Amino acid sequence: MKRIAALVPNVLGYAPGQQVRIETWAKHLDKYGWQVDIYPFESESLHEVLYKKGGTLTKASRMTASYLKQLKLILQKPPCDVLLIYREASLIGPAIIERLAKRLNVPIVFDFDDPIFLTDLHSVNNFFSRLKFPGKTHTLFELSDRIIAINDIMGGYAEKYNPNVSIVPNVVDPEKFCPADTPTESVKLGWTGSFSTMHNLKAIAAPLQRIQAKYNVPIRVIGNGGLKIDGVKLDIREWSPQTEASDLQDCSIGLMPLIEHPGNKWKFFLKVVQYLALGLPIVAHDAGSTRDVIKDGVNGFIVESDDEWYNRISLLIENTELRKKMSLAARQTALDNYTPKVQVPRVAQIFEDVLAKQNRKSISFRR
Image 1 (cartoon, rainbow, N blue to C red):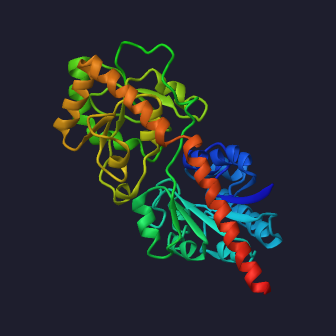
Image 2: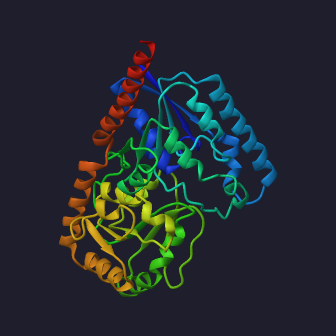
Image 3: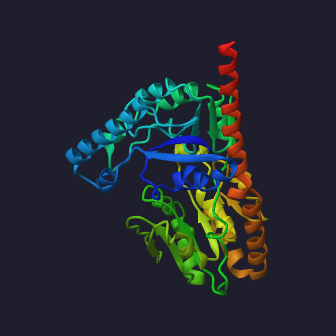
């Protein structure tokens, strides 16, 4: 078996992006002759405190320990034929570990699924956010033998620094994210996301108020932390990777509203693919690669104004046949484009290509 050493920022089984990329790829790459060893920067003890308010000294101590652990790993050279870096090798600091990794004399593949080159201070950890050095992403572009970007928008940006770019979108497990065995006849709106994205629902407060006033439909919100919208009743469920899919299964329509934010124009939104796999027609703001995924009027609607939000959601609530037709189209879109069966063979070929290129370099050097 050829070996991949994957440097990732977060503990396993927690961060959605990391889960649906390298953690998912790792479960399938063995069929293509690749063993994946994943090395998280976060320790369990750091993870326990990092996303809570306060405790700066404890966070600093545990952050330092995690940094030294990852530095030691690179200095001792993890056994591998290819090194993958997902987003960043370290949650803090400039690209020191990444530059040292270049000395391992193995090809580096850099996978990024978010505009991490933008400065975006997190309210819970402002101090540590200032130590993230987003500019090191550009260094990683230049150090890498191949870049994997999540969409054409970010891939085009990376090509300014390195022409060796491949596009691999997110995937979902179609066995886990699948329509309910017995679809409910009653309509329920659904949204899923993280602590940092829950506020996006406030962008459609007015349409949701009108929708509930007319139809009295439940609105399920799956996330971390509290959220209140005046005049709107929310059924809030705590997000967890174990229950997210089942909590969405009894929803009928998926929502993806967005507030104005410079990062949104770059993004591929995981929730869109999750909704598709579950067979949920989507109503979404136009941002990032949304138009590449949602075919307006086929598997969902792309909207802008409050009136458009209200009218499209109302249409789906009232028109059962349209909702069923779009549900089938949504599910098929996911099966055709966003599953491990479709994307992992492409990922395996990327690793084969960079290793073959490295081997040709070695042969040429020996000559």
